[in-house]
Length: 197
Image (cartoon, rainbow, N blue to C red; front, side):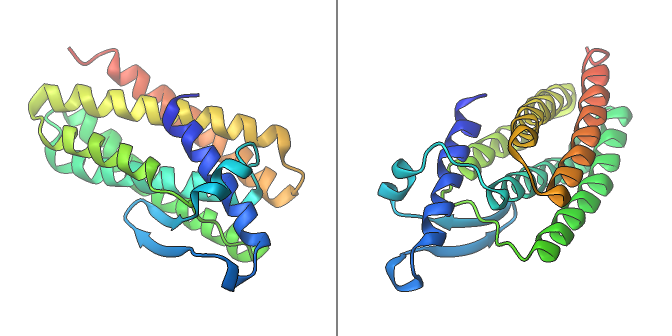
């Protein structure tokens, strides 16, 4: 697990503590970004619940990762020089929009409120997007595929970890389906990466 996703897990744990506090005891500002819903939680809350990952946290992680992937894929639709990379991005946009809708349906069905209590995952994503925007041609194609593979590998690790600890059947089913999609996306990205010179 890399530093970004470890940070995300630590930060997501703060959500559980925040939910236990009354609304007047919490100083949480929520905002919706291109990469998902972000909450800012007090830093002492983050440290207090570093090891917890609730259903709400897992759903926030999946949704935010797919939102970030969508942003990258939309960029690749216009910048990729290799038609195969554009095709991968085009497929990803459609699939990830559907997966986000599926996540929203699970969230609505279970009446949970997923939220990331810190911006660290977004900061990492923003710098990766800036790097991608600065590249052109084959250099862009390689960087896009590298980032796509990295994101899929990290999300697969998180979903595997989450599946070990989930008892809610609705979330388990969603995560199992998500895992299958991640594995297929990862294989496609790795295969294509191996052919880009």
